[in-house]
Length: 562
Image (tube, rainbow, N blue to C red; front, side, top):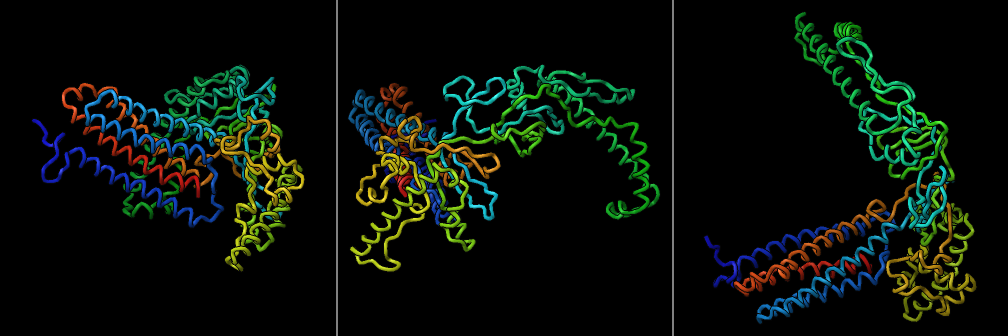
């Protein structure tokens, strides 16, 4: 049966089925993105911590804005070419649209990669007042060499980010009460250089439920591998299952005994009676000979002890003598303080939260900032002192601007919290270019030269030798790290929303590319059978593409410029 109004419009509405459908779909899309934008604005307005401002590089976002606007124009040209029955022009314009979409995604890829490789650390100070200072930068790379961690180049084989927790381990205990992560075991074996470096401390055995004899599952001295751990887990699970059935059977028998005695009280009244407690004691004695009681862990020894390093996300907690992984694996040995430190090149100093905390504590922000741990580093202190010189010149400039405009009191121009308490990477580079001398005078004369948009295309470029001179090297001890993350949703609400909205928008771009690409590469048959049909489909796809463009036009100023 032919469905009416697929191509031709209804006379009463002037619309065909497809156009009605796309408008209904776009209405639902408006509610989706409208909710996300509204949520972002409310979270920003009522944020109880310093909200990130202008943290995204503007140039990639600006280029993407023009790219999407251009693609919206070319998709209209492609539709017009079909209406004029010009297939070749349609192919050209639609190809340009898809190239623009691809360029958009490539630029977003560069931007995402920069965020994934940008590190941030909130300092945990053990002083009288924890100031929660934040430093941003790039971590160095390292590799294991004969059991020791050494600096390495990013492209070296086996290189990893030197953001690790290290321990010289002599003993590992794997909990069988929850599944062991095979990836952890594989990584341990790889770091040790072979499974034979681990020896099972004692045989793992369980009782045979029929004979009561012990059945050895793993012999003492067995090497560490996932197969052996799977055998131990199967033995433990089998033993627990058997014991659960035994306990259930005895418990059922105990309740039968209570009912046979004529006690008809509710269960909660029975279990507090002396009669029930005596029945339970007798059952416990009888069960002893029937339970397998499989051990819930296996322990391996490492002789001589070896150095292991772990991603911080894999570690739940650690002390001087042990650390525990997320699968409850316990590693005992000597905690490597130096190997667990986080070396990084600092390209951002954020003391806004420190100032906010100081006000809450009734302390002068300058006093709390002066006592911050990060300013104990002379190179970081040099950057901060240079920033104070710039700030002094900036305050004088704002005072003069206020007088020229006749603004006084609360209407006068004052530095923002970001200008007072945050040093961005481009400011660090400008101080370096000025040689850290006469910053106040050079700032007044407008002689400080920041990197241009091209130099900072995706943010601080740590491959630029000049920039690296401006970024202080600092080593953060593990006990000073209160919280650390790359610039991902884990770091704060801003980046959680940024990746949610831009990621969802990117999926829409990919979806639009697939649909429009289908019309370009597989639409010839539709064009030859009924050109108006294909034109109708391209028009529908174009409406969706215009919506994708419109969403980005809202995204760019909200996330990049505010």
